[in-house]
Length: 237
Image (cartoon, rainbow, N blue to C red; front, side, top):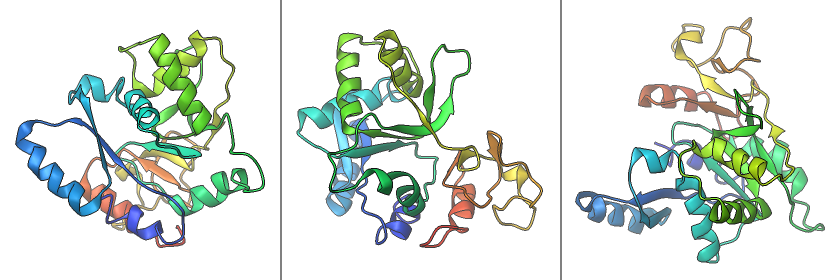
């Protein structure tokens, strides 16, 4: 569903590559995954990690970063996204990344973009639904986790915690809540689409789709994912 929606919709207009990251699968699924990767070539497997809920929600992302470094991958900018998120890749790139990627300048550094979270923590972090890091941050976070191998923290919180505990100053460039939010289907205008009523407050954590939406999240049901995707075209909303 991800390949056939936003990845297809925005591929021609936006310079991005996508990868699906998995831990070591159950042998029952190995041949199927191998066939899928032969077809699409977009799966990265972390064979040293067991496929468990705990690992997926704590250290998997950082282990992926370490894998990229070990295997000599390199991108100036990398975004991590949950599978129940949708991204308007064209307009995210146009509004948030293109201004940073001037080819006359060195690669951007200290980039950390996402929906800001803090809750009860003494530091900010970007929600794991979707965040974007420059390569120097990938390298830094990998090093910090090697030095401080915390394995009992939610993966998005863990990024902020590692930098906080190392006394490293950082800044979260904040995606506004109208852009990155939790999609609530019961907040739609009731016409079968994902659109919010015109008078709905969209500067809150959860709402339906409205102009400016870049990253609807919590699309756990296929029906909701397709309903949201159906509101976008190759130019966005």
